[in-house]
Length: 529
Image 1 (cartoon, helix red, strand yellow):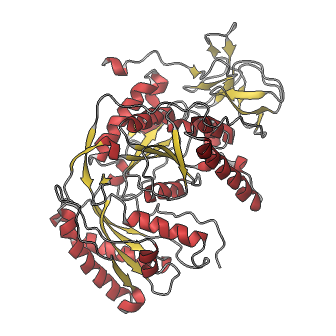
Image 2 (cartoon, rainbow, N blue to C red):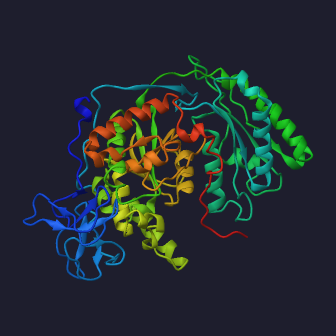
Image 3 (tube, rainbow, N blue to C red):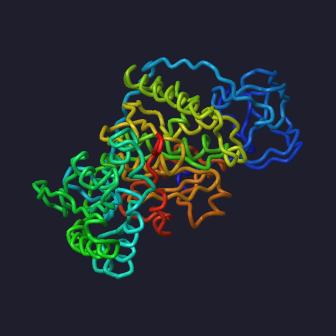
């Protein structure tokens, strides 16, 4: 074992900050188990069973007193809590409290990597770099979704792809929208932005568009409103003076029905395959990686293992001149004051606060509140309040400056750490990240989420080793070694190397399983008419 991966003796519990009054179980603990904790004058004995990822009080906590984890408030005791007691929803409330935002008070210096790293990627005509080389069939409306699937199924079943080994896959972008909302209204514009983001994604070498013909987001409107053009796939060494054309558009009504549309579209894809296949991976700087940061099915160890390790990897991407994109606005609620301090300007910090205020309003319109998160699965994994969940989720953002806050599915074209405004729900969040141009996703999970999303590879990272071993066919990376004594920095460095390997073509478990089309889910907030 080399020095970078040497491990200390595995702890029974983890205390994250000296001011914390809870510890987190690094393994299942029986009742009457003695915890010898540095800094405490007397040992603590568990009063009951403490499950992996759950919290145990290490000091007396009076009723109404703040519960602290990460050195931050995660809730308030609903009754007095004695040392050794299990601390969870039965004795903790998520009361609101004021946060001191201190905009741009602690802007960190942007790190610069001493060694410039590279990966094998596809240089596109617009200067972006793909980590995959795919052809997309874009459905503008649910009415053409089945037809789009028939097209891609026909291509796969024909066996023609074996003649084009440099094309990773032909996939359909289908959804349940495209009509029924106000024409050119908010949801209309968002859907078109998402579809355009997938069509022009650096992982997409070529695409065609399929519609019904009478929908709101009809193909010609999508092309014109989003200025969609086909720059053509760029083979290795080709210049940027490529032919610019309008993309191929088909509508079921004009073609004369589903069968004729499928025949025409299959022929259209066949014509796209040779040019897409002419693309080759070449050595590209790691600055061309746009890394999407996502967590789902979280547990009490998410903020201790996988998320902070991902934060280390994100810092390393930023140090290379690349981009890391945090999302899930509702899941930075309670941790936003840590991000506003790192914002490069007051304006950027205030953007984040305004997004959160909007979410408070939006939840209230439907009689809800952001605090109804975490989910039952999160709670079973040890997460008690949204504040605790958010503090752990924000660890994915590492330690670099927050350079901008962008709208859902907006292009992520700035180097550094960005925040994209998205829901916390995994498919909707990752759809926005990919539409924004993320060419690699890292998805951390403590319960076992299995999401993939074409055309971007999704690296699944577990927070604990038992989960990794149980779901090894679906999980790519185990960060649970931190609970066994490996340092967060060591795991983060290994994760960075995994990101480069996957960006260079190593398939993820979800790709190997053929997952990634059903998860496309554009965010819709308004009424259907």
